[in-house]
Length: 446
Image (cartoon, helix red, strand yellow):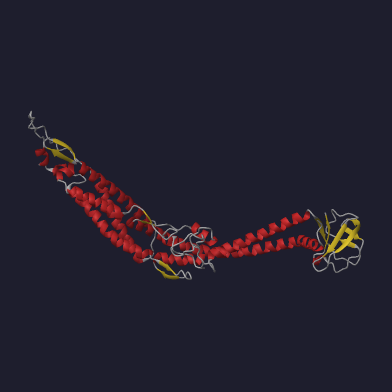
């Protein structure tokens, strides 16, 4: 089906406008690129500030979860990037319909301010904590086993053994009493095994807390002083644990074969062992001291990390304390839908991408139209004769039906009478109002 006049004019206009459109797109890209550099520098500053807070947050979260067992999530830069791009399932602008959240039943956050009830405060997507091994479990577990060991006689604690008196059988026939039997005391050995496991688990937790605190440089004088005390408590506990773990568990070199001899043996001669009078008391004291300190430290950590309360009517932050609050404000500098530095960078980058897509679409249009239309542009304005100077006469020949048009002049049909180089003679005059500066063009349908 032949193209209409309007379709021919529009198609030819598109072909001649593409070079200018693409050139303007390149100029716009260059201008945007300079703006991107400035915007990226601004966001890099905000990211640096956010990362500095995140280092502190991660350290205190590690310490706190090792004390109370509430597993904390850690914020990553990818999560922030996903929020800026509104990736499906992101944590700062939830966008999954029918996935109800505790503070947004629809699952979709509709405000300019980011959503702060999940990873921004160390929680899961659903504003909850997981659970992990913690001192609140291991310290009581260890102390409970110490209580069991304290209930045993000293000789049993030190050797892990007990003695059974040989018993006679009156018969008939009567059987004389057999020898006394000294054997492993299962409850004592089980208690010490459980105590060792709990103490080792406690040590693992303490080492993780120590590493977390040593990984940061705290500039706040109050928190720095608290951290020094926390590291002292951790170090003191680890030292006591290491000393205790290095001691022999049991010593059975008493040489006794009777209950009388075993029960009356001077157990101190078998010291040191883990459950002897001194070592058991020392580890108990260290664990009790740590138990007492964790209550104080947990209160400090809760204050240091702080809370965020966000109004779900308009998204505004109504309460922001501690490091969570400080970091949230910086996150807002990057992610606020109006003016956020990372949002601006992404918007500018998307603009560059859109301009590239425009050029691709333009070039594709030229390729498609070239399959149905051959076009050349004027090299000089028409002069009121049938002669036209064009940029290329390739593909045009005498006898072709052609059309002449420009941005401001109507399409006119003609026949080619002669082609001489890049000069084409038509069978009709072309008014001088058809100018190359007005995108004057000559084309034919293929």
